[in-house]
Image (cartoon, rainbow, N blue to C red; front, side, top):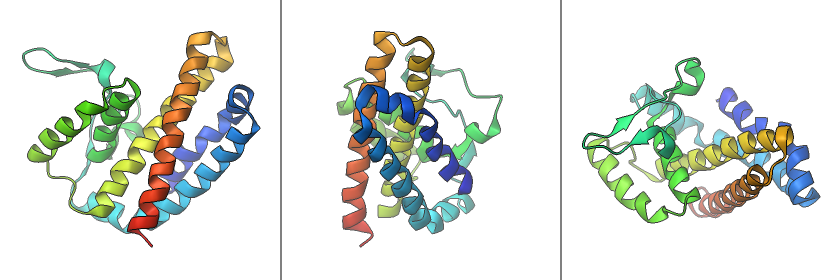
Length: 189
């Protein structure tokens, strides 16, 4: 759990770039997000531990997004993160959330429902509201990772494409944050 909190809070390392591109208010909102993520993970700890005991934490892919899947007659998934078990040994919802977030980013949200239905039919890994909250958290976390990666690239080369990605991932990150705040108000209060 502490590692999950630290992974999320690592986004703070690019706060300067986010403020440079999006303004001081974005930096303040980023700090709020980090606090909220810590609190949310504290709330979800019992269910996260239970999911691990139930076998939902697996040695998986770790980087399952649309650029790492070929849709041939038999789908081919490649480019697994082999160098770091920390990134690869994850809850299956984390893997699923990464692909789902990627679909959102590329404007293909309409594919999320069929993806979830097909996946859950074969792997019934969501059984209650806490699991849905965990799935939503993981989507938010994956947007966090993409935001950080693109902010680091913008810091290094500052081209318009990477800066545009920072802005787009920020919007997705903040959208997920507000959705989680709303879900938290409904589900956990």
